[in-house]
Image (cartoon, rainbow, N blue to C red; front, side, top):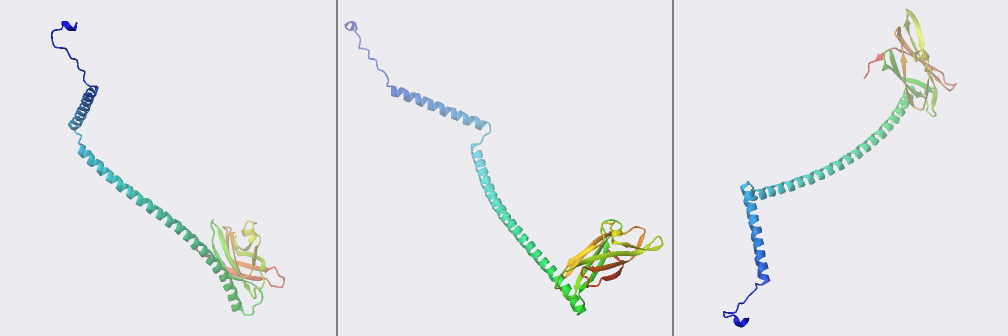
Length: 244
């Protein structure tokens, strides 16, 4: 059969596979590039400015950094304020404790001073109890009053003084003289006041005066528990002080 072919011999050549793959890859890259160019053109036509967006993003990142720095400063300041507040709380507690100690010391010294004043004023006064002060103020309810009574020692305070105090209110009611004892002034709740102290003691007693009763004077009788000390009786004019 070859001998019957009078023309030139037919040569068939196949292209290398590597060239075919290279052309295919180049076509894909060109297609991707064309797609990207088309995508960018579409965004540009829609009003998207890549440079403006990048600049805005940079500005926002700077603002975020500033805000974070401010936030750190605020947290540091808050921690400092918390430390200062805790320190002030401790200082206030220490000051309150010191003031309490000083007030207690002043109270003790006041009692001792009141006692020694009584001793100096009376000289060699007999041992006993005397009334240092008596005041009457208005009570929290109508027709009620508070009797403020202060007792001090007279003589040497080598031991505590103890005893009872009786109160009686003299006045007029229904056109006649009348006297009300402590039981009548407290609705039979209190019959006597008891004291027990070494230098000074303050007694406060609330009393209720009938509306029809007109007080004139308040009598106080101090009875010591020791039988060798004579009772003390003293009368005060009824005078109600105004509330401070």
